[in-house]
Image 1 (tube, rainbow, N blue to C red):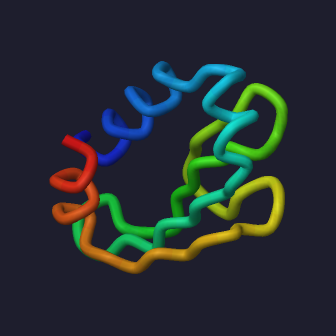
Image 2 (cartoon, rainbow, N blue to C red; image 1 turned 30 degrees about the horizontal axis):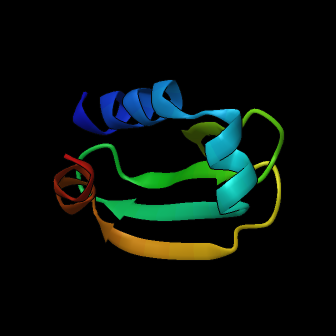
Length: 74
């Protein structure tokens, strides 16, 4: 699925340096196919991505269609 694959690629690209320099948690409220709440955690050690609420409070919450999310990251 495009959204899950996009988050998988983001997770694979994370480094300790990107977490250390970003220090932010991004929550995505997606509509459409594969809609729901997803997150990118660039604050916790190692960083993470996933479906559902982030493990710590989000610094940024974005709402968009799942199609626009995939376009934004590709």
